[in-house]
Length: 464
Length: 81
Image 1 (cartoon, each protein chain N blue to C red):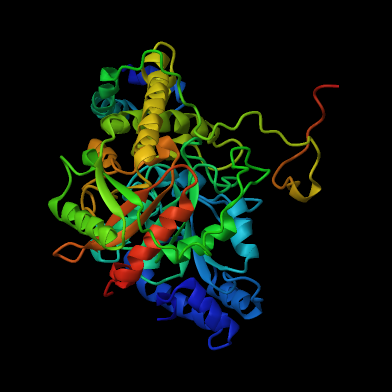
Image 2: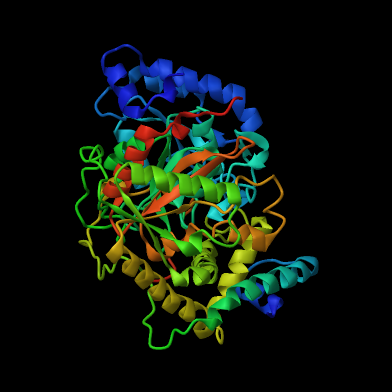
């Protein structure tokens, strides 16, 4: 299939006129028609005629031109329904485009649709959606991960070339791991959040999801940077992610935190991550055991702060200005709003909200300390392979623990690259992640690229 | 947790059945997050944001390219003179 290939190869072939943008779009549309009824990756599909007309007229100005992509439905799109996975916004038509959407569109990529997700980002399985769960393309009795299950499943089943995801506690990385693809959670502020429907404002990040680290580097090049409309976007210069991609990782020190490899971790997942560590040693890196003692408080900190922020962000959905009433929130979203409201309420603010913000400082310092010694941290993405449908959504606490390895990344604001590192004996994909210091995307992408040059997990695709 | 009171603060329309279910669910969640009370945070400054940017401003100018059409609104007589 054409979209098995990397974006840069597709772009070269487009420029040589070996293939046309219509060819790629047609292939994706056929794949969507055939597989989406089974996978349920889309919430809103752009009309196929519109897509093909767009493809016919496309001018090849950048490496992203003519490449079909999808958006997690957390990004607002002018005149195209945007739901955040919730019935509260079931009929909401935005009046402008998110910054990331304008950037990708003006680079010439072709939008195919808006993808399924846990409502407002509240979940790790795309079961907390009002548009029916997304199925895992590797085993449709299992979940695709979340909150961005739709975009990840669409890439794994070749309905598009890449996606723009959103990660507040693992929402890019968890579905990337469980669908066997590659996703980058950027440093907080590296990509503008303007027009991204807020879950937890100090945790939310906008990033690429694709099949390889190389694709992620290419997309990041087009979406990163300061945006006057997002005061929290970073003024630091954007690196050249692509030109350094092929540099080797000899002598780099990779930390393996013992707290990430212990209790609660599935033994097959553990073995595959340890095998990946060996692979990095083969590539010239050094692997050392490190310790992040505050990790055990990661769940408490995240599940006090993110719900606090979401209870405030979601207060605007009162059905008066737009959208439907608050009775349309799902039970999981109501739980998060309730926890947050409680943690911020008079008498409990100091014991919960403020205490968690202080603990957040300790988590940030813990990571800083480790990064004085190592260049990166290697760990699993999720403690288990993809779960069966119904397993997480019916158990609120289990649902929270599914994010245990990913959410401290967001608490600290650092970047992390999730990529496939193997399969279980039953053929389910397993993901690992490389976390790095603030604004170390360049290094993480290099390490991911080096790993993917000597492994082939990322080129495997589900038999559907 | 007084779920009825918190539900009112959160402006959530909750039935008695939902309140009852929330009471159990939220007790379980609180039990999990209460672990934080074991962590010594005395004399630690809180972190409200991670990049340390402060006072980010831009000129207070009208950007006509970003003015939204006021579709779906209606006009009323002015209330304040």
